[in-house]
Amino acid sequence: MSRGGHIHEITDFTRSGRKLNIENRLVMPPMATSKAENGKVTPDLIRYYQEKSDGGALGLIIMEHSFISAEGQASANQTSISSDEDIVGLRELTEAIHANGSPVFAQLNHAGSAAKEEVTGYVPLAPSVVKHPKAKDECLPKAMTAQDLEKVIADFKEAARRAQAAGFDGVEIHSAHGYLLNQFYSPLTNRRTDDYGGSLENRIRLHCRIIEAIRSQVGAEYPLALRLGACEGLENGSTLADAISACAAFEKAGVNVIDITGGLGGYVRPGHSEQGYFQDYSAAIKQSVSIPVLLTGGITEVSAAEALLQSGKADLIGVGRAILKDSGMGKKAISAFL
Image (cartoon, one colour):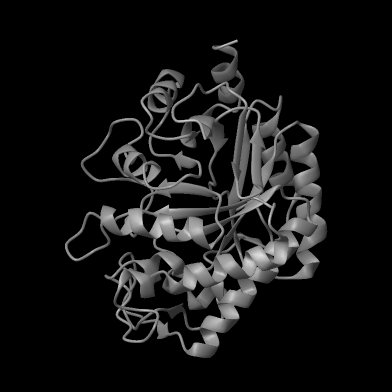
């Protein structure tokens, strides 16, 4: 696999028969729009992605997170991939993006303790009875039982089946920004004493079982990414060493793209304002895996994206807010090198 590269290069990443072929290294990462209604794709949501994909300049689009089950919904107006009834609308969305020439992944998510009972109708689930770090009330989640864990695995698997049926070119598992799988990964929110808590191996056991379940459903060649909140930078939180070991385990389990971002603190990194502010994480992880690593985080300029690639900090570059502000940013970025 290429180490370093240019933003305009066609990439062909292959691992054990699994391929991800994209026209360039520029990725639009998932960004919530709150444009769905009752979980369903709306004309407004389709127009949004048509605008962002116009011209086919983006190498890959990763759609905003979709909830895999009713109890895993993060917010009102979030898109659902929890029912077969969702497939028709999602297919309309993928067809609109494909018509513009860009591939698109679905991002699968369960909010865990970040869910709100007034939205879902359920008491939030979590690894342990620990208040969510960003919670503004004193409500505590319910610790997941063995039955809950099996249901979550099955829900991720079924969501991946729906994504494939709806025409998505791959799926991404969301384990960042304080949602359920991030909560299992972090020792700050995972206080379990069973096989799913304690050691890093235990804290990522659920991830690996989900990866294996999805891979068994979608087949060996369907692209599967995982977005990881690499480390908290907080006392007793997850560490870069954890992230390096976890990503190696995810690759072994069947993932073929790693997407690096923030953890419980969200998509920002306090004390850092440089473009690509998770680059030390992505660079270290890139050395421990043989699959492509995607870096996001405050990247707004084409020159910065190119420099990060050239210096080997990542294989793919995610540009979010700049594309949110200027839908033509992708065209400008690629045309600058042609």
